[in-house]
Image (cartoon, rainbow, N blue to C red):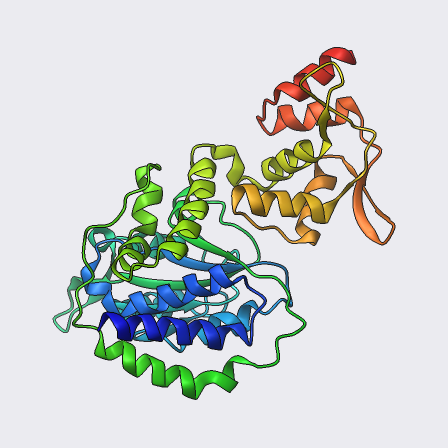
Amino acid sequence: MKEKIKKAIDEMVNLLEIISGAAAYQLRTAAYYASLTWHLQEFDRFPYLVYYGNSGVGKSELITATSYFCYNLVHINASTETAKVIREKFDASNGGTAVMEEFGDSPLGEEVYSYLNGRYARATATAGKMTPTQSGGWKQKEYKTFGATLIHRLEHFRQPTLQNRSIWLYILFNPGAYAKAADIKGMAQDIAKVLRETMSTQIPTSYETPKFAPRIVDTYEPILRLANFLNDSEYLKEVHKEMQIADSAFKDGQTYQPKGLLLRGLIALLTIADPNGGEKLDISKSIKIADILEVIRRNYQQGLTTRQANQYLEEMHFTVRQSGGYPKVMALTVPQLTKACLEQGIRDELVVKLAGNNP
């Protein structure tokens, strides 16, 4: 059965490659996640898999294609469905897979987030609702909601609990992609049949435990267990790199705020070597928005769209203009930068030093 799982994962990656611009490691993560949905009974916690990136890069096609491989699939639309329908759909996906496309700031707000938060852990994956009885009284109806969750987002979550429980796939546009999700549906369903045959295979509970925050290790536990079981050492190296990024972000709560992220990315790109030793900030530079977003993605495993970045930077009173065909932060001043850091609660020694040299 181990060889069946290995082969199924390789075949999933090959199919996903023809429709997506995601990196090979990310596609392998999607394939691992899909295969693990057939073993949910073995886990007490299960992370969310979040596809994010700019509009038009193929997130919908990739999440749809991934869903074909998953166990007991239920689609949830938090933007148009009522709280009652969403609650019942989470219940229907208990022990299975929920897919939430275009999951932004739902009109239902906290109610949907509470279902999603609870879904991560078997012990908390319940929702209650008072319902009338035939005798005219009331009784509590309990919904079970534990399971796997595929989520489509334009940006990161603002709720740290959801953020920390997510594995993030940053999707880039691939002009060479030549197929749609529907084109691989038949082949994907054949692979899903093979995965169904592996459900009785137990994934060993022992695995290599990296020295990261327990919350991060808990999030990645299913993937760590399966990768160790399959002796996939090269993939494990990549997983550990992503866990390092998530661990750093977890230990720095400010990184979850979009404006804080943008400031950190901007400061990183303004940093240059100081001829007198150490580093300093060069605020005479103009910085591409795309470069800031790449720093955020690489260092903090977070995503923002260019439009969102422009909006947040302008709200912090930075000047954003088109230059050379690219939107850039330009005409920076020391008061501008130091005020933004103060308002966002970010203390950076280079900014403090710069302000001290420019009273």
